[in-house]
Image 1 (cartoon, rainbow, N blue to C red):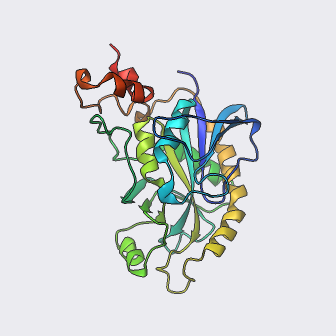
Image 2 (spheres, rainbow, N blue to C red; image 1 turned 60 degrees about the vertical axis):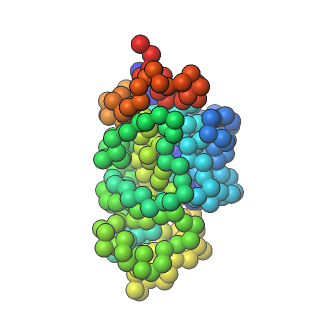
Length: 287
């Protein structure tokens, strides 16, 4: 297997990758409907890259309206193997200050209305104890450490439904759970990445203290956007430094997540389902 493409999913504030060369737009048709936008395909430091603004250009899509399945399927269809998800988050810890970077290694899914699997027509149970690809996470850590940013490696990202921010009671409860950051978009994104056998990790940009902090102002979208704009250049620098580290054939378990996960009897998987999901499952169904 050759070196696969690197995908970047841009969150709030990151709607383009300025350093990409040989840029072109690619529309992808998926069995799950349209992705958030056209994919921006180009190269960075000689590596093929694919960029997708998660909320669409102009930030048209709120978190619950994002077609996560189409987004991840499209990345897979374009030959992406590694995924860097850039996300704005609220800090749930005093030491994670607005403007800091966080590379979480765990998730808590508190979403309610989102489809979180590609596999509604057969039974597939992927391992998800370690939801972040350690290879991508460590590459991000090393890249971030080479900048002037303050970086927190590890921790738990709680994904809420949104689009409203937390109540004060919710924010305090999540702190009791030991949550480190809170956001609205990395679930079911990370679950679908694992089902698509993509190596996924998050570069989170802390923008505020949610509403638990007694001395900081409550969450205000104007303040958040100001901090995000300041951090967009930093995020792009970290990504540019990460790209050269993601080389060669993958050896992590992400690349074979479905190998023992398909429970349905192969003879019971219809031709229609095989055609619909072939991009994801064909390698395990052919004799």
